[in-house]
Image 1 (tube, rainbow, N blue to C red):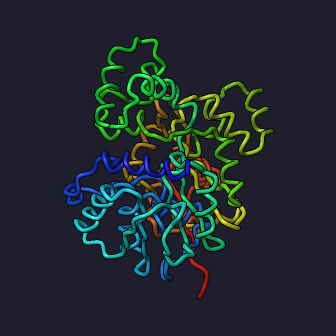
Image 2: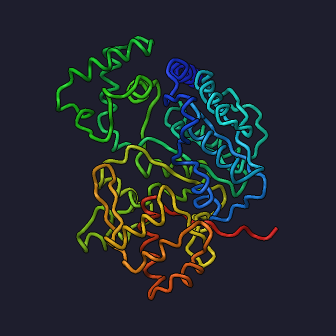
Image 3: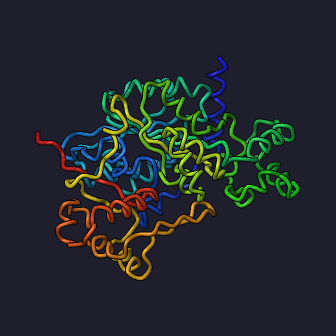
Amino acid sequence: MADQDGKDRVRAHYEALPYPTRDPADERNRLITGSPSHLDEINHYVFGGRLDFGKPFRALVAGGGTGDAAIMLAQHLAEHIPLGHVDYLDLSLASQAVARARAEARRLTNIAFHHGSLTEPPDLGAPFDYIDCCGVLHHLPDPEAGLRTLAGLLRPGGGMGIMVYGALGRTGVYPAQAALRALAPEPDVRRRLSVARRMLGDAPETNWLKRNPFLSSLNDDDSALADLLLHPIDRAYTVPEAAALIDQAGLTLTALLAPARYEPATYLKDKDLMKRAAKLSWIEACALAENLCGNLKIHIAYVSKGTPRDAAVAQLHDDAVPILLRTDAAALAAHLRQRPEIKSTFDGIPVIYPVDPAMAGAVALIDGVRNIGELREQAGVDGFDRGFRAVYRALNGLNLILLRHPAPPS
């Protein structure tokens, strides 16, 4: 009964304020992409880079909201996997209406829309090759049961993309939620929004939410502010808690994105401390990184059903084809010729990777067609393997490069 009450409250929340706010007319101008569920990420982190694009591929977007993941994945499948299909499932009809309009604006015909709960899904003709569950588990009355249900819909060897809230990066959110429960106990979410804005405006600068530079609040639109502070069910996870959630569902955690954010070496400079960190298991190292940086407000994970991590994730072999994301090879090569380093920022934390300037020519050759063996041969760079590993480690750590292997023969 408590679970049903929770579902009803979550449904009412998103019927009133579908999230995130999206205008279907914008589909004419851009495709919103992100993680999880970018097709190249799915291939790299779930299928070892060896997904056969010529075979049928079935995906479920469980808790599809206003459609970001469903639209992105359906568009990618329409372009690369003709036999690909997406099933969208959500509790909120208001959210589904936005997602439907976006699909219609793109003339996507490979999405089927369903109304319902992922904890008691309608008959969708499982099993699925892949399931997206982004920003949903932390809003369920029983996240463990929800993830077990989804795991049961996966085929062996399939996988999922998951996003859950990060506990440390959301410092300040839960005291603010508690304050709003005291000041605005009424159920009407729009009335509570007015209270929330006034309360945040009055709160002193010592308030932890105001002191958290990684979360916006007063400047959020209504649906974003409501999702941050007024959601009826909301919890956050540390890395070990998220790993335990995945493990109890019988799934294998294969990746956390962006990988460099979960590497202690991103934050440590002392050589002795780095040696100590190197002795930790992968999850222990990820937890250490989380505790060091303090700004991970979400955890984006890929998981596999029945495939060990080292087999699920694509590896650097000569037949692997590097795929650049959000990066132009020619521009990156020109930058490396001028300054031999790859630099980024993680919510205020600068990250710099020095690279061999001789690798600029090899980077310029990355076109999504040449494999690593061909790059080595055509670049003609001494020490190619060492240099390319450094470039790959930097770009992959920033989620800017992935690998695709040839599909096995039919």
